[in-house]
Image 1 (tube, one colour):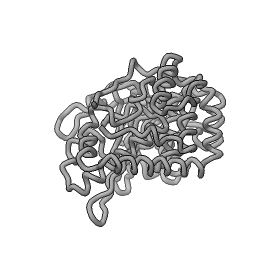
Image 2 (spheres, rainbow, N blue to C red):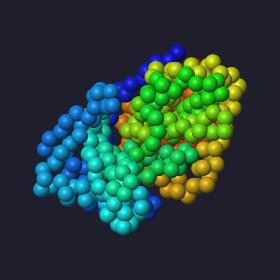
Image 3 (tube, helix red, strand yellow):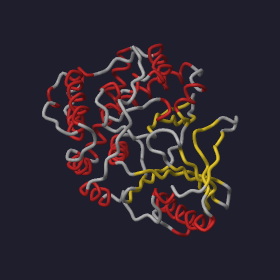
Image 4 (tube, rainbow, N blue to C red):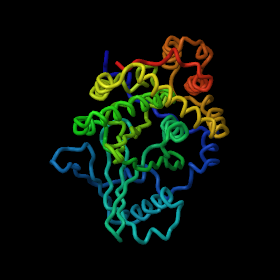
Length: 353
């Protein structure tokens, strides 16, 4: 049965510990920024941002006092250079801020900055958010465990995230599923692999609007890749199904494709393939993963009742008592990864249903 699991209550943010900050600096994930999230909150007016059909996007375009605007724009272009060119200031002369949008929906309330290259009018985006520790762990685990490179910068209480291109999942489901049978099979296959990656790292709340689909034209048909874009619910909730995208009702149209086109044997094959690839990535980044987990197991990323619930449900799911002694969410994530590396997970394959 499919059902839409929702967070038990509003996500609580957690500060970055000193050890985690040291890790971020060691691996060039932290840097001194010329602007903080709170600086962008000083906007003086805003107007609703509408899409091409005139619908409210739940974003607002914000405006600043003229005395501050030039300084803010200059700082934002410098941040973009840090994010994209490792701070090469030569690119700044061609860049300008076209628009700053503020999201009024959800927990994170991010700012989205549109940068335009005046040489060719090409534009790009990045996001300015509050630096929640669990969200940053999600970004780092995505970088290490998935096939996707993730770029971000942290400074104190501010997080800068690169824009991840792709078709938003809800729009993809609405417009792109009525395709050839070959492409439908490929879509279902990639969703199975995405489902596994989320479950291994315990990244939750992957409803259709929290991921994008990257489409690459191929010799025959297209190739697809599902990519998470919201890491707010990294190992926070207590319900096991919250970490399996297949159980969200918003994703059922894709799950239905899998039921139609993939046998359970084929689903198991794709699940095992993805877990094997994750194990290969873990081994290639063994020292970095070890350093990350040494910090993560000590940090508070959730609350005891949620940790106890997830321990219990994962113990039942995996038929393994490795989770019994876990006291933090970091320890639960580590135990889940250890099962993967031991290949002790054949009994825990979840049928696509």
